[in-house]
Length: 226
Image 1 (tube, rainbow, N blue to C red):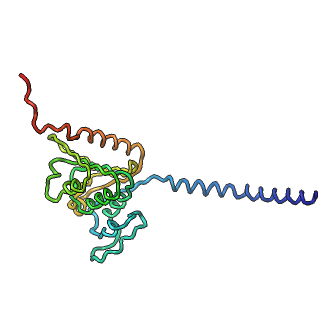
Image 2 (image 1 turned 135 degrees about the vertical axis):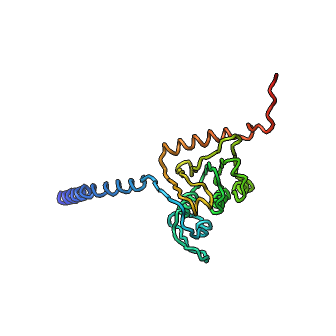
Image 3 (image 1 turned 60 degrees about the horizontal axis):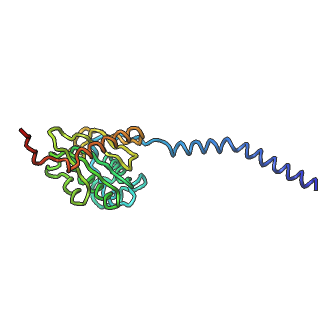
């Protein structure tokens, strides 16, 4: 009986020693895994973007990093580009998308926004009253699809160019969401999930959204009393 107890003690001691020896490696792996999971999203895109096919992304159920760009028989290159990276970030929305854009005429980006709306993502758009009326603007199509749109009513331009995905990821930069800017202009877009930056841009969006409430429009200004 004593011999059996001794064998159990020895086995337990050996097991404990092995566990302690493996503990630093396990903790190191866990630390590295958590750091990878918590690594902030930082991406910079420069334009003009190479003209590539984005049809596969627009048809994919999940346009994440693993989604293939193949699958379309067109003659355009099926490779990654600044536009495809922007589309991937946009199509990653699952709950909400806030858009605050001076000009919006890109058919690919317009399709992406409509797809999100069809999938049940809450989409809200703020834009400039002058540029929304230009030929090729996507704003009319978004409104027709049932997406909420608000615009300014003053002399200054609504010149912002940013979007917030799921209230977590900020897309901002010099880029107007137009084919001209995407394919021809020298532009930049920054994509990041910095909590403080996202919060400040969301606050600005909500402030403008309230300010541009149609109930506050003055189509027929009241005459001043004498």
